[in-house]
Amino acid sequence: MATKKTSGKSSKPSESPLSTPASSGRGFKVQVFYLAASSNSPSAPTKDALWFATYPIIPRIGDCVFRDGVYYRVERVFLYENLAAGWCADVEVTFYGRR
Image (cartoon, rainbow, N blue to C red; front, side, top):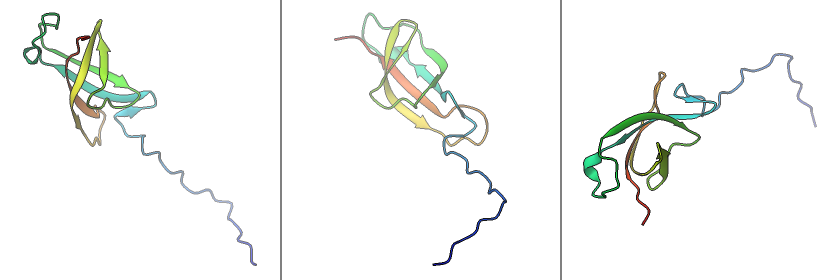
């Protein structure tokens, strides 16, 4: 059985699939938006909201996110293939009242 000799040259290191420009080592950038008109609860925020956040994973439908003392439930997620710095997804949320 012949042994294979390796050359002293190192090959180019492979890039991780998570090393996209929009994802840093700390998480994924997402744009979150809340439409006040979509909630009928009297304790829901009355103003529309838009914010940017970084999460360890992109929130999925049904997940809850927390901001300014309010829980929001993820209703829709729009993923993007980013080739430049920016965000990875748009996340549409509604008020999550404890039932």
